[in-house]
Length: 388
Image (cartoon, rainbow, N blue to C red; front, side):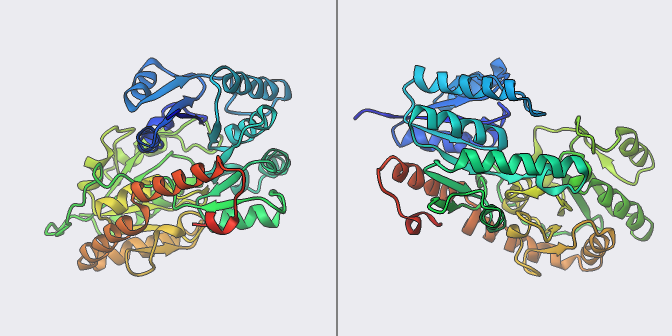
């Protein structure tokens, strides 16, 4: 049987392994020849993709800014890959790869199944720059997506936004899956007996304002005065974003023993297993945050915002607490709840693991994606079959 050739396209090479690695394995096991493309792919990532059964490829992409000449170059680069390797279907994710791959697929007359993994800064901010980018991005989405075989969303809020803003055609086929999923084996459940007097909070994120890092630091500073034995851990680092927090601010709080700062870490499961409550006060438009899914799988109570993507991970007062976006008071109250009710940590943690098993297991997500891709290679589709 001839293998169908699928091209996965992302904006960050490492994401093809970290976020799509299990999906690549599923595609390979389902008799697909998998090609994985991203810009600036390091040798280490190329070898990792080969080990997963994928063929690594690079293409031209400027990850920041908008330049018509560079945009056309990216589209042409993807079109050349499609032609050279006789690709049968394209599966892009994140904003630029989705837009450029959709146009390249249309030019090549092959189906495109795109995954909207969150809308990020462009649809979260209200600055003049964010609003300008939002207007331009909407136009680009509206032009690019209209011929896609299926557009997949990770939460209903994003689907609703696209429909309300007429970014999809009237006949557009859509689907919803519960995020990228989590490998339950890589993030094994640990029962938190909480027999220690020390309660440990942890936040794992890019250290930018939209992720709520400043809110977390202020809450830690206030709560440390009331609960001196509590610990407030941070994993991540500032990046080049204009809203990145200053490293000096993090280090100053670490030097005062208000927080425990770990920088970037590869073995995140170890740190999650040694912590009690996971916190992500993000007001960034997430798809479904992978960091929360990992914490769910470990068996941790979750504190996160009542905002798109984040709210999907919480069964209110069952496995976590939803807080008001941008509200330091709401965050602090939620954290204080667990400090005053430590017995709830184990109870909520057990419910988190159950929720991960029921809804976010990567095997479930990948089976849904495979179903959509297999159907997309057929000539006719119905929306009813694809809303998951």
